[in-house]
Length: 491
Image (tube, rainbow, N blue to C red; front, side, top):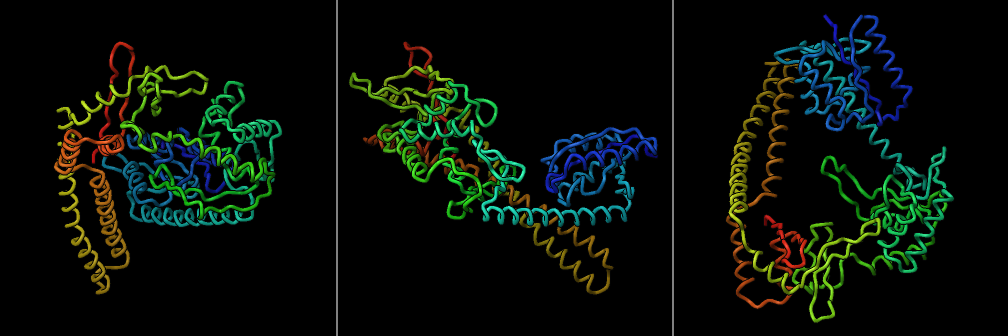
């Protein structure tokens, strides 16, 4: 008997639903509770339906469902819970029905009991249809954006500063912001550094595009964007950073088309800005030429910016931090004579403390264990393939009916998919893992080279980059030598 229920509402971003749709769904499900005298709690979120991982509200609800707090969960349609991802639906099934409890799924049209085979099959079928529909929507949506971009229409999200989007989804120039943008352009063309332009904007309390202060990155992005030339630019990236498949697309494959909006800079200005920025590369010339042993690898502990080396005028170089914060203040790191710093780094560079060595040995053992597990998994794959062949043979010989065939085949294919997923995950870990014997062999060879041969600064710099990803410097007292911390690479 149903008494306690959870109402799950989701406004789909994929279908571009508005708040009115969500309100109607809420009223319908609440009315259903009132008519049946059910106690209810509402879980409501705005998210795409692709993955549970991106929907925190349903995750909270499923934790409560797993504890058996509800007799049923009310949704407008099955696809509001999910759209057919096997892993996600496995999580849903485990939470809704287990040895301790059974939670029903209720829609205005039907009540589903996942312990009943017919209901489970119906839910599977509807979630599969929803998955196909979702992929179709995504494909058409992307095709529409590509078509619109080629026509010069704005098809992205929030427009860049100083534009805004009118009711017809056409970009227009904000007059007040345009004055600020022109000021940025003029300063960049005159040779002002990006850091100084950023500082000027923040010191004059000019509002940034988003809350907070202006950053050098956002200033560079705005000054170098082709959108401000009156073009629509689409397809710079693909994938999703949340799924670790985010990649940047080569510029030759971008969609760049004349757009309907007004340009706020000329092509000549744009090219001059690019030239000025290129001439002020963030890595100093000496660092790019590896003039110093620590070029490109020494970082300040107080601000985490790369440190520089400057001539003192007294006949020696000094390692110093010249980073300037957005509010105009400078890093207070105390510099140190470069020759003495080089000696300090040389003394500590090839010293592996026992704790780190034990950690590397343990990582290597885990690496070997993972390789053994991978081999065991791979030995199970042929067995699953044989089982699949037997299922097909049994169906062809009439020993099992269509439903039995589908159930057994799906079960084995799911086992195979899970096994392949485990192998792929472990193999990615093995690739990024460490072989302690190989590591120590390389480490000792570099150490021998470092101490036995007279090396120039560029060669020493190259060896440091092979061994370490970062050397962090901190000096709090002028009378004492600095503290250094070396972050070693695993290969």
